[in-house]
Image (cartoon, rainbow, N blue to C red; front, top):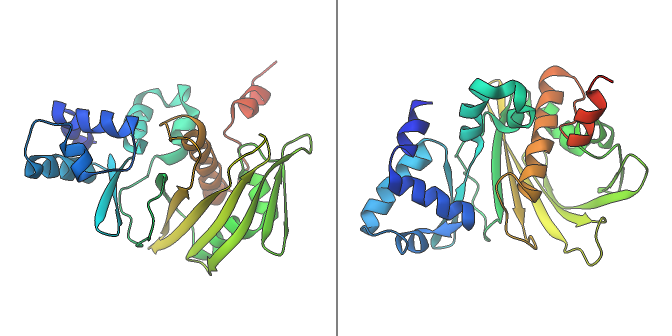
Length: 253
């Protein structure tokens, strides 16, 4: 917590976060051009933000891209107003470590730590019945030949995910094919699993998105709610759907 407030105390670091909020995944050169300071100075500020978990660096070829990680801010907020922000619990333990090299730059990156075994996490990510238990909107998921189809509560198709690559209990790459809009662009999602004692670190990456990612909206909000359901399901065994619709259903009449 102290590292977060220390990182936010400097106006230059706040400017860097504002810049990443407006355009995520910028390189050092892009960020340097926006501040009246040396390259070394910008690097020092980025290091502080990385240590606080507010920025996640990601190398692609010769370039290092920087992504805003809002989870530590959610954790700080959740400490005082958790009863009013159930969705904030989604990524309380998100961290900034990304270790697996990729050849192309992701449009969205997120991490969470889940108290579970590698086997349990892998099963939750590949078993259609379990997927339907924790997804924030899908009420039914089917699987055939590693093609997963998600359905809304009324039975309407939500999206399809075709497995492109799979390294057992370590990595999954699949398509993301929305069915809720015409001419939807097919994108790619990646799950990376690393085990750390009693915890598993799950990294989520999303590529080839049609629109820029805005923190707390669209794709970012969807992954936050999805991760909240997955984490709760694995750690408590309870099926909780972190969606506005589900919250309305749970409200007393």
